[in-house]
Structures are given as structure tokens and as C-alpha cells.
Image 1 (tube, rainbow, N blue to C red):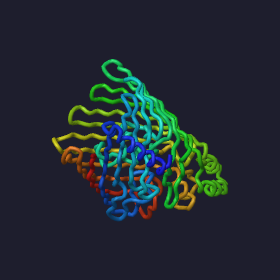
Image 2: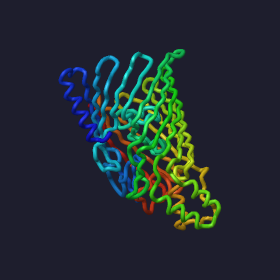
Image 3: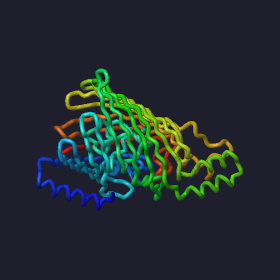
Image 4: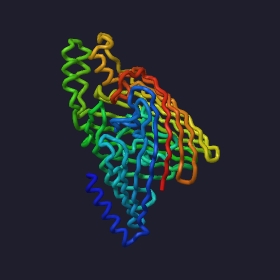
Amino acid sequence: MTYSRTLTFALALLGASLVKADSIEVNGFATLGVVYNPDDFVFIRSLEQPRGARDGWSSRPDSNLGLQLNWSLDERWELVLQGVTGHHYDDYDPRMTLAFARFEPNANWTFRAGRLGFDAYIGSDSRHVGYAHLPVRHPIEYFGVLELAYLDGLDITYRQPLGEGLLSVKLLAGTADEERVVAEDTTYDVSGSLSVGGYLLYQLGSWQFRGGVITTRLDKGLDTTPALQETLRSSGLSALEQIAGDLPLEDSQITNWNFETHWSPGDLEGQLRLNHRESNTAIVPEGLNVMFLLGYRLEAVTPYAGFAFSDTRNTHIPAAVPAGTPLDTLLRDTINIEQRTSFLGLRWDIVDGVAAKLQLDRVHADDPRGGYYVVGKSGWDGHSTLISATLEMVF
């Protein structure tokens, strides 16, 4: 669904709301954020962004503005629309991130169809709402492998009390309709790629346990792949010829298995997230992604600390490739994502619906030629300390 067509749909809903205005709820959210990066690489919060913070301050990575409309037709039917503007591959053009119908015939079942959030982790439905999350941003080392913002498709959720808790089972399927930045001035079109998956969620008191799997079959190739394949095959090395055969993205399959637990007893909040990625394309390497977060609320102020890393050490550059050569650089940019970030922060809930955050990140990439910050980097040694400040609100 294009933005213009969805906007027309939204205006139609607003017009219909004149008949029954009390069934319409319109909410908004916004983040005004700045990041200071003193080093010569481009810091981005997600692979949607072609530009970010570099050699100074930038508001690009974290600032956004969104509106959401919920229209309750009756006790069972609801329509939801959400539009967001923020820096991404189409600059600041607004995007329709949610546009779905929800049907709940009873307390056990929920059916949704339309444009849905890519439900790959706890809290994914509110990914654009900075106020809803404790840190300034989700670390790219963990969430970079779960980057699709939405799917056009459907999902089914079944809920049933189990013991003293509540068990939820979700199945989902849909196609992507967006792009990812893979290099300076280069994007990869993931539209048409099919994702299928599901998860189990068990909520017990202050605990949430979630385990799930999502498989994505990519629909298109990358324009730069054939030239890289030719370079590898012309080397005469069997190991590189094997990598060349594993490079194509079209019809490749990426599977993410994840387990997450959240613990929130009173003023304490803890998170542990684990993701294992399987892939049959060398451009998206297999690996392990981990995130840990702990925060404690002291009245209006919540200090927090966290750590995230991405490890793809099972993917090695053949020793026969001389270090520093163009071929070595190409391979490292393609198949190495070994990076970690430690962060400390402070959240201040100023009034209900408004919060300010200050966060310090320490980034380390084992090989600065690889990693997630590949866009426009030059002369970076793999280490950086970043400062972020945001003012976040819901209204």
C-alpha cells in the first residue's frame, strides 16, 4: 500500500469518524534527539539510514514524529493506522508503518491483516515510540539482524491461561516493502521478500518469556554481487570460489531463532535477548546476537546500563588473501559483523508523557572495515565513545 493511497484511506476514516467520533482515538509520539560522534565514521541507529552522526553532532539518528489512529468499529473490530517521519533511505518522507484491521471474536483469539509491525521481538509494535523504551535506542548489534520495520500480511494470536500465567501463541506471514542501506549511495530493495514465523510468549507475574523463529526468503539480488563474484572466481583459490557461490541474495533464506526474557518487579527492569541467525548467503553471515539491559527507577529518575554484541566468528577470511588488498577489503565489508557496544544512561520522567534521556555508548568493532557502521566510514579505528541526548513524548 503506497503512502498516498494509505493517506487517502486515513482521511476516509477521519471523515467517517464524524458519525461516531467517540470511537476514534488519535495519539502521537515524538523524539527530538542529538548524537555526538567525535570520530570519522557514520553512526546510524538502523540499516534504514544512509547518513548519521559523524565528526560532531547530528539529529538524524534518533529524531522522529509519528501519529496513530485507532478506530473501534465495535467490540470486535478495530482499524489502526500509524504514520512516521524520520531519517531513512527516502530522507524524511513520511511512511505508513501500520495500516491493519484487527478482529477479536473473543478473549482468546486475535486476527490482524494489513500492514503490520515486524513482530520479531518483545516490544516490536512500539519500536518507533522512544518514550515506550528505557534506552535512547535499541542497539544495532542485536536489532540489526531484525531490521524489517513492517510486513504486508496477516497474523493470528491465540491466548490461554496456563498455570498461574498466560500463554500466547502467534503465527505470522507477510511480504516486505522497503529498502536497506548496504553502502554509501547503495540500497538493497527487500520488497517482495516473504517472511513466515511465530512465537510462544508466557507471562507470569513480573516475568515475560518469549521464544520464536522467523524465516525470510529474499526476493531480489544485489547489483554489486556479480562483479564481486567475478573477482573471487578469478583468484584461483577454491575457498574464494566457494564464497562466490554463496554470495547471491536472490532466493536466499535467512532464519532468526530468538529467546528473550523481561523481568519488571516494581521499579526494577531487566532484559536478556538472544538471537541465533542461520543464512545460506555469505552477504548476511550466520552468527549470534546478544543484548542485556538493567535499570532501576528512583522516583522520577531511572539509571540504566546495557551491553550488546554481534558475533560472526564462524565466518573467516581465507588466510591466502593478503591483508589490506582490495579483495581483503571487499570480503571484510561483506561478511564480517563482529561488533559490541556498552552503554550507560539516565532517564528522567519530567511529567506524565514526557521524558528526557542522556546516554553514553562505547562502541568497539573488531575490524572497522566490517561491522554495521559501513556507510561512508573512512579512517575509523573501530573504537568510539558517543553521547546521546533526547527529549521524548507521547500525546
